[in-house]
Length: 145
Image: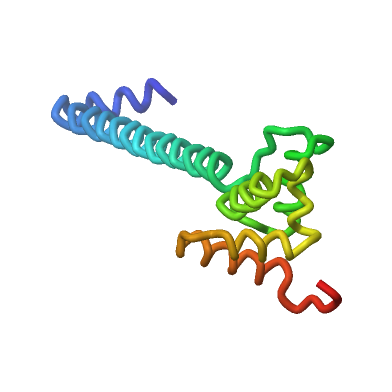
């Protein structure tokens, strides 16, 4: 079979053989370029995907630096359960420090702690954030508080 093909190619002459070789070379080269382009796109896509996952994990997934058995760890868990942002958690920590509380989660149990801090606070922006936090935590609750 190969001998017949070789004889046919020789019969058609050398120019036809050169043309066939060029076509074969072009098809191999274009296949390599397509493969290299596809590989580049996949590599860049994976790199971008890894970057997005890293940014998400770094900024949006809460990480606890404290064990849950500690006062700070308990506060982090309660803040996560209430879906509070980091700034709101820092505000609760500040209120707890103002009242010298050993357990910062006590702020979740007694709205009067926020009321007292609101009355003492002179900074309008902080007062606004404290008021929003108090509304979020205690709005709609009834009782003798």
